[in-house]
Length: 301
Image (tube, helix red, strand yellow):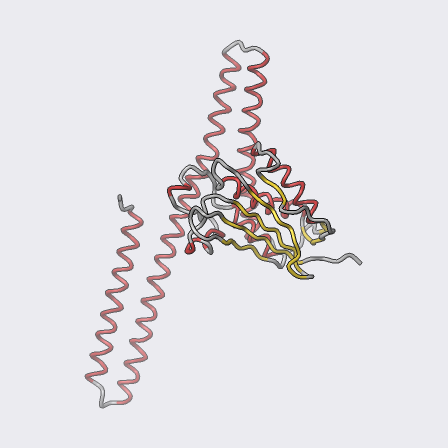
């Protein structure tokens, strides 16, 4: 396997940090042995070398994290570039064909349909990037109102089916929610978070999509949306990291899945800003996943 330059840099800084820590420990032990009869130099030496060792460890961890963060950002930039370039190239090609070749009405309609789909893909990518920026910085309650959560989930499910050309059986409720479940929030932000959960499940479900959605109230003050798929699954170490900005699971099964690594980050950012949370569960690779969004419930007076 080819080792990347960042992989070499991480290995170098980890090795350097370990060597410096080992050297500091050796000097500390030597100091203790040499001054074991003198209490003041002994105590000062132990404190001094302990601070040096702690500083070296923290510095090494910080450097490695920065390298990995930069690597995720580069991956994000490459993904966004691809997500923008591909539909633009497609639209350009079809427009050139329409301009230079005589086509019948059926072909023209087909070309228009494809260009509209590519345009929607472009808009989706741009919206993800913009909403990720907003999710990081917005703290005030802009345009908040009472929202019937069950109705919004149902409408967003219809939109996801339409966007991905799915049958009702491929994306369905476990049991349609019957009660009026009210949350307080911005409709656009909440719809984006819900759609991102559906979009994620669809993308990582493979060819045979079987996604079950469950809206329920685990307690009187909470509304829970769970999206369960039978897709590629997630390994245990990845479960907490997949909500990080720019992070995408790296495995052979995800190689063909396109994305920016922002969808789940937006879901958790919105949930936490609303006083809720989002998390993932999976029994491992190849065994499907369940993503859950929890929000505070509001009761009408």
